[in-house]
Length: 228
Ligand code: PGA
Image (cartoon, rainbow, N blue to C red; front, side):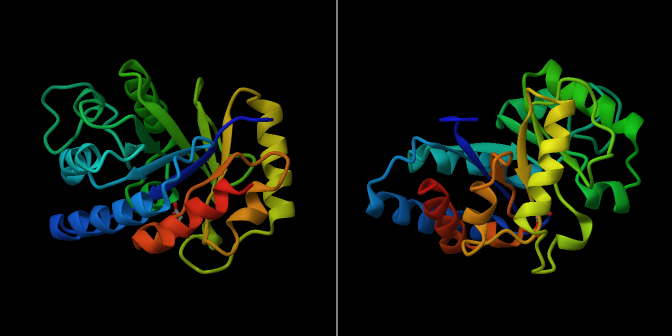
């Protein structure tokens, strides 16, 4: 990817209340301002629960932080009579990215390839950047996905990562099939291991979950990533 930006995408999952979101931003902004660094070589994003997207947007503006905002899922339907669903056009009011096909959605919400393809379509109609999660090199990927995140299920939230060598091998195979996609690794990413993944030939970024909940830990991932 040469000089292309490295992606650091935090996935808060179903965590935090509004007070905790405010504290996260206050602390992250302080670290950011103290460092006086712009991190022009990084694309930093935080994916929050739907309900906090407006708050995250407000805080991002207030603190003038160069970070993008993402949702963690999207309805497979457009606006309309779909009780409880949040549509792509609603998300696009507040966010630039959306995670689709996370293994936790596949497992707990029984999302299949057909539904995931609809979600990607809806997101693309609204120009949302799709971060599509795959569990291995054979996972089906819908058309025109811009960002693919390789996340082996056994590495998520366990403190056990895939080896950078194997993750890079998977990334290389996926990139053969989808040459235009940006490739992320996710699964127990931390400030200690982020550089090992970003140093590989085919991995363009990381998707930390647990480590993104703590602003200090997320910050350290950002700083270490910026040095690659
Ligand atoms: P983890 O989560 O960093 O806590 O392992 C990653 C993810 O599920 O996206």
